[in-house]
Length: 127
Image 1 (tube, rainbow, N blue to C red):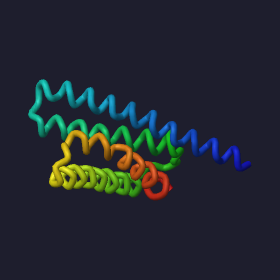
Image 2: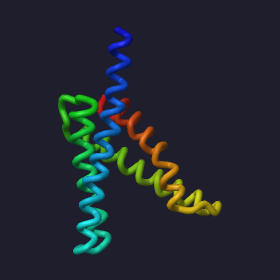
Image 3: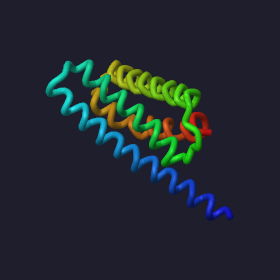
């Protein structure tokens, strides 16, 4: 029984990473194409909106097997997305203040943000 539970958790983590990469690729593709024809602010807003919608569905249904995706669950997911965005911004600015390159900081904090996202979705959003 314990082995089955551990394998389900490992499978969930793998799915989270695989779908996260897929969501990133789709979102980045849309961002890159839209940057060719739209203003930057519109392109980034569009890509973030698509990321939010795709992420909500695939993490809720495919990763965490949540039965009912409704407005209350979406509000929690949206809140988490905003918090992660603010954390990302805050860490980048903080480290830059201390002389660390913004791009390097952004790359280094991704694993932390992914971990926070996974744990928050598992224990708060889709619980």
